[in-house]
Length: 120
Image (cartoon, rainbow, N blue to C red; front, side, top):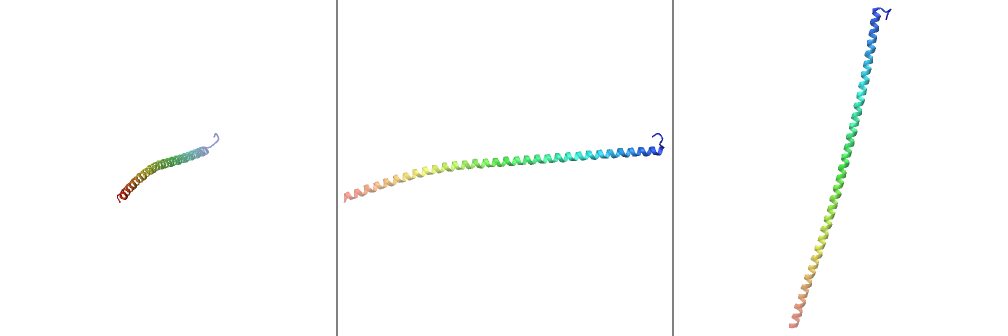
């Protein structure tokens, strides 16, 4: 800068200032781009994690519902078979009692008829 006039000196300083401002603007733009990319990546990761958690919760809920249905079905089958067995046993006992009663009544009829025939 030794042989430069003051005017040329000012022009060179202005050019350097413009170059420095352009470099600072480029650096700021790069930083903003990097920050937005990282924010987008973080948001995508959070969305993926939320979706995975929702899927896991849905799977757990369906598995518990299936288990509850299986358990209640099993309990209902056990209770109905127990009631059926009890009803069958009760029916068998009732049938046996009825048969015994009818046999006894038949026996009385025979006795009455035999005594009437002997009186004749």
